Image (cartoon, rainbow over all chains, first blue to last red; front, side, top):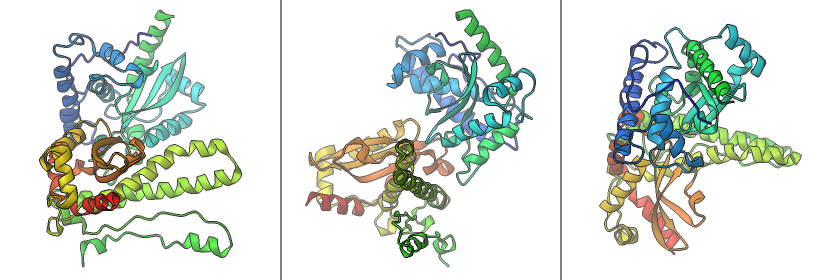
Length: 216
Length: 231
């Protein structure tokens, strides 16, 4: 399945769609400066170095990700490519004044596939909290259904046959400065209550539905 | 008052075990957070006191607590004959039990400079390192490179393969103990490269942490383990 995504990073360190201090007090400027300015930047820079002169040079990020996943036996460029993709997707999953319950079509779908927003919240929270080690939790779309997923390290739903709609980064670098003393549960709660951009989720869902029906 | 006693660890007193015995019930072994053999700030400037305290009191303690919980659930599942519950618990046991095993070794792998931290290994381990890696510098370079290249969370190890009688460098993911890479592997030195091990001090620059951690590696302990296993 050719998974189309709204993110076409193509080796560019795109800034988040808000200033680095815009998510305060929920996610600090300091965290954005390191997380976007150092971690995300390094994935992009290292990816460029890795693909230079290889058969992957000039290929889109999606292509590299899908072709280096190799059923879990990861090829060399996978980590940098997937992490570049994941981080751009993450910044766009958040917005200042975000979080809380969505409305309209999205709420109806969450209620259809999870029975309630609260049940979805619990499931997403649990996935993010129990991803041992580094990784990500996702709301994703596949087979006309919404579902929660968790993935290790750089893995994302694209390589698992699903359309990503929302993500939270649960690598320690994502929360270690703001939620000191290992408080990942508080970080997840803050993300859900104050940061999620349901607008982004909606537009990704529309793109996913369009892509599914066109490839049906 | 010493810093360590101000922030003293609460060790379980085995109350649960005692009361179970009094009732004639079989009790499961519970684990406790081991004390550090040095103050939290004693490894500075290589590793900050802030990191040591959080690493010990929050991270390692969480592994111990969750390991005990998983073992208790396992005990109940075994007693009920609930095979699928037993299997389902394995990942929590591996993760939290591994976390407890690995960190217990790690605290012994570190020592303040004034107690020999950073002093090169002498004796048979020193010789074995030269034989297998050319020099201590060669070993350090290899372990630092593998630690830096590890994607996500995990550990880089110097181990002894008891069967083949040789030293090996290897990495494990997440909290997998070294023995998961080979049943005859004995850990001598493990370096935690989870971000929590260095982030507050070194931020994203893991190679800088790896450069500095060698200044507080306790080669005396590694030598003791090596000599014991070689008998």
